Image 1 (cartoon, rainbow, N blue to C red):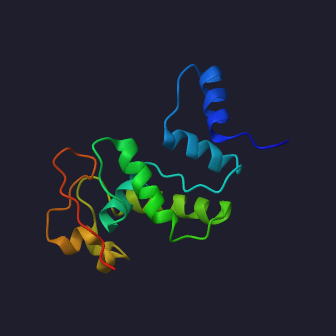
Image 2: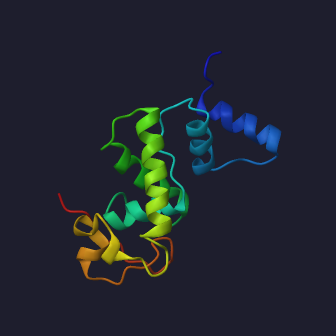
Length: 138
């Protein structure tokens, strides 16, 4: 069976579910179905990558999601297995260590590479309207 385009999947999902899905839901479906190598992120993984300095914070979550996804995916081997593993690791890290409120920076294995921590700014929620993003160096 040929793999339909991403737009085709969005249309099929809209017809069957009754609403248009966003980029995050589409990418998650493509990843779970193993139809395309795509770095599917959810808020925990996206938050972790923003704090590490990947991508830029946009006015809306979708813009931030696309920016972070693009920046991080460029550093990974583009395969379903690698992207799926990265998704799970980033999700877990965001849930357990790089939490939205009170991140556990002292327990973080990548703290020395964290742009948010290095900036000296309070480490807040990157999806809050008053967030001041840090930039990754090098």
